[in-house]
Amino acid sequence: METIGCSSFYGTLKIVGIVISIGGTMLLIFLSPMGSSTEMSYHRVGNKNWIQGPVLLFLSAVVWSLWLILQPELLKQYPSKLRLATLQSLLGSMQATVVAAALQRNIHSWRIGWNIQLASLAYAGVLVTGLSYGLQILCIEKKGPFYAAMFYPVQLLLTAIISAFIWTERLHYGSICGGIMIVGGLYCVLWGRSKESNQQTSRREPPGEDSLDVETR
Image 1: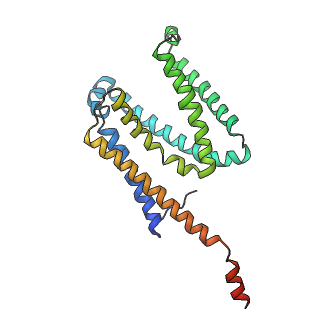
Image 2: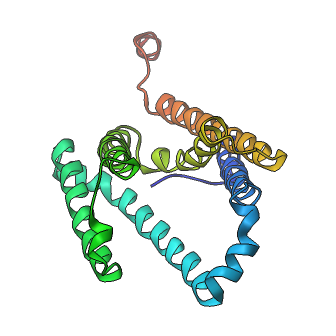
């Protein structure tokens, strides 16, 4: 769905930007305070869960990527964006409920009180799920899935920045370099994509009236 190649400068720029953005994301993850405690987490969870976790995260990323790719065709046949976001949230809630009921048998853990748990549920339901799904569908309809997917590494950068201001977590130099790489790679990809779109548009435009008059004469 996205033309990427080394035949043009802007195509090469998009590839370089993707590599830089992914490298910055990995750098931000492994050099963050959470990533620096991986050795302690390894001894706590054991070797089996240490392998299952990355495998499940990888499968989740693959499935989510496929869902982003399928959405443009789905929007052509089902253009109601609000209803689509509602159905997506409803089906996701049903799946999460089934998985949670299978893994968490303690009924006391299902109780919700007037505490941080209720606030986190409201935040996740209204902003993380409802608002983000609606904006994502709108973005995919306007710009395509490639444009929406390229902004996902920015979530890690914003999380690190907000954690530093609210929870006073220290940002290492590696995390700062990773954030700069994410922003720089994203800019390279979007700039290259914009220039390619302008070139394709100029090639498709018909000749103007002046050129037609010259040819007629």
